[in-house]
Length: 308
Image (cartoon, rainbow, N blue to C red; front, side, top):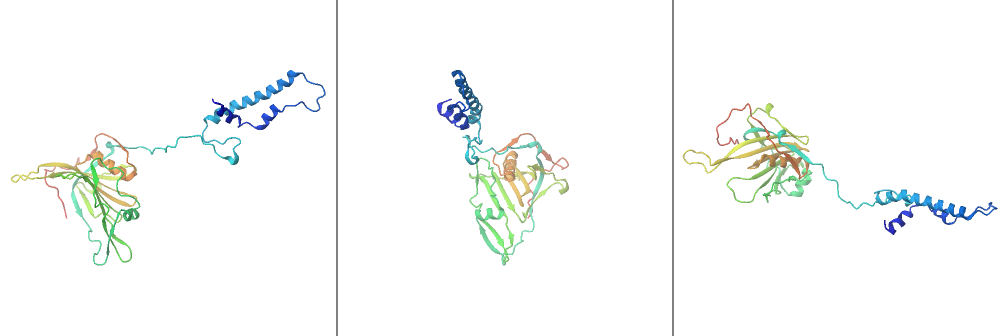
């Protein structure tokens, strides 16, 4: 302990104790002179009280953070903490054993012409407009390494009636590898508050489709093995197949559909979870995920059934 800290601690003592010790005088009514050892003994006793009090206060003064000193005017808080770090956000952990995928047969578009280009106003929205309308940045907090955002992501055409009501608000964002590849590697996000017109077709009936719970949001995951060319001129067999995963869910009044190509399912789950939670760091407990296809007959490899 240095002299300054001891001095600061002593300043916390009530001044009446110090005055009593330094200005000790015999009482006026005292007629007989007391022996010298009594006088000095009393002063020693007072000094002992001061020391004991200092010892009891000093540890709290030096170590306690965010406390109110006894002589602090107006109850001012003395904060001795130098730790200005913010509390870390709770970790988001997802177990792959809780993820269920459903076999997909293709897509179809319904109710596409819900706006009238002759009477509705065509408006181009930028990122600021989209954030104001959706009340969130539609870009996911987590984007896998190697994927870049399309330059067309925030150049969206919407349609608005004369009365100000919006008849088309669909937004599609793309995040893919920048290199020229024969097969897409990345994912797209389609979002709408009115409703997504592209519908995913599952092989099982709607009543048998299973969802996965991610932080309280029900997510329907789909899977389809996709062929890619070039195709053999005689057998018409594709050069190979790649995985395509779909994720559909509704969160905060926004309907989402994610289509991921040549991505690991764990990465797709991270993208979905980052949209739902708004957090970038998602921990995945790896393991086998459940495939909801036990009652689906095995189909021969063929080109996907894309329905217009």
